[in-house]
Every structure is written in structure tokens, then in C-alpha cells.
Image (cartoon, rainbow, N blue to C red; front, side, top):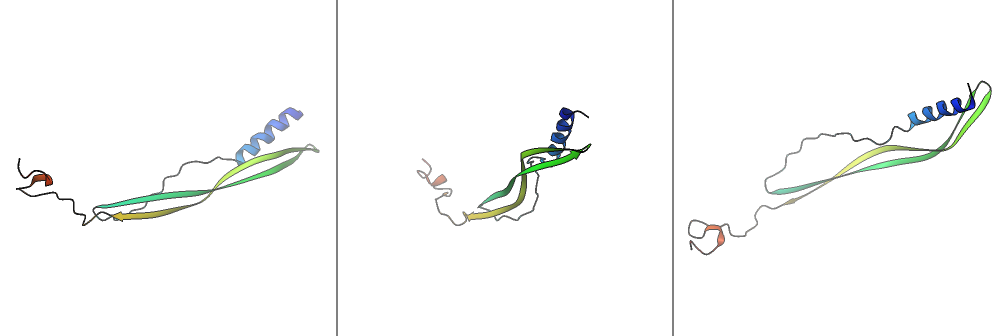
Amino acid sequence: MSNENVIKVLKAVVGTYNTGIKTEMQKETRTIKAQTTVTFSPVTTIIESVVTVTATVDGVEYTIPNVQLRKAGATVVSESSESHAGHDHGHGDNSNSGGGAGGR
């Protein structure tokens, strides 16, 4: 195997370590009261490292320095809610539709 071919193979092997960051769907059921705004804020920790990969092929050592790897760590979802129940802004009645000018 030529040096160029060995280096290509080693780079391909290194590429399998770095699978990249991908989107995954998480599903959870929540009961939310009427007139409530809920905000979910997911934060995923990204783990980055720089390594040196060394392999010996046919008695020859090959080294690939500064290989950057990125991996998704834990995802933490924070949740906040705000109730809008009980606010008075005058929806009105039959004689004062919409809180406006009383039927005019």
C-alpha cells in the first residue's frame, strides 16, 4: 500500500470518529392550563477535543495530528410558564360589545 493510500484510509477511519452533530426529536407530553404561555429552552453541551491518531501499517507508523472531534453531550430543557388567567380588559356584554362605545 502506498503512503498516499495509507493516509487516505487513516483519514477515512478518523472521519468515522467524528459523526458530527445531528438533530434528534424528543417527545414528552405536558398538560398546560388554558390561558398559559409555556416556553421550553433546550441547551445541549458540545464536547470538543483535539487528538492525535497514530497507526502502524506494514511496520510503518503514520500519525495524523490535530484531529478535531465534536460530540453532543447532555441536553437539559428548562421550562417556564406564565398564566394569563384572570386579567380584566373588558370584553363587554350585550350593551357594551367589545368594551367599546356601547352599541353605537
